[in-house]
Image (cartoon, rainbow, N blue to C red):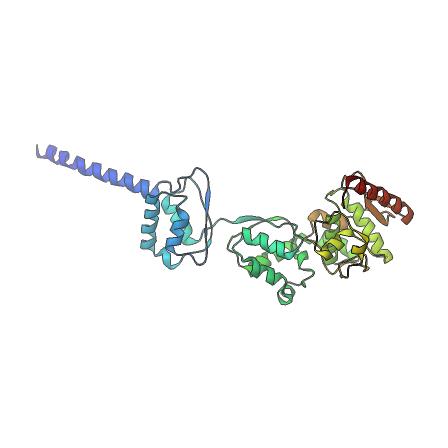
Length: 341
């Protein structure tokens, strides 16, 4: 009889323990996020425990954030908050989320370097993707000492960047970011590419400079080796490149759809109508297609080109000035017919 009574009294205790275990599992080991998709939280260098919790509010319930605070107090998370971009998946428990933030187990950003026309634009883009201040980055890329440390000057620094997609931690500091991009640049410029540039009598920076002009001339990758051959012919003969995109860059007016004669006299080292040879540096971050077009140019005897009058984005080529004038006249008439000024 006593044994039966003892068993009877044990039942509520067991139920309570099971209930407590279930509650603990739900609160601590249960899913932290209330979203059905992966969410991201960005922790800055100046965040404290309160601001971290505020950033977690759109992702988790008040109850789960309360548990996060409890774990934070126990493990003194407020004393060593780590900045970063953290992914919170729908199936992660509260304790797992806490451990990731506490230990700095962040998720990298897939960063695609854009073919920016100016370093200011690049700085603005990178500041939106990484924990970098756009003004600090823009100022650094215009600083001769900073560029020299990387092996460039302020005119050629655009050659450092290879438009590709990289996995980079959101809180990567500027010096480590530049070091990583320098390594990616060196990996891109393998022995084969360097050998081809040398055979053309060009440096890596010069290849990027010419490629940047070609990129601005056309978006048609199939035609780029043809244009590269034409410009290399002009360089070999000591002729000015007379590339309209360099005038736009010199004027800092990238919206121009038509170049007029008075613009060709604009005094700038980037104006290839006034100066022979290549400009001081790229007029944008050159594309991989543009770089490889220079390295694998088509050999021919063309010295002139003009946009086709059908506005297809491709060009008519000519080996003599008389034929070029005919091509130019057709294109000018097409512009007039469309009222493009």
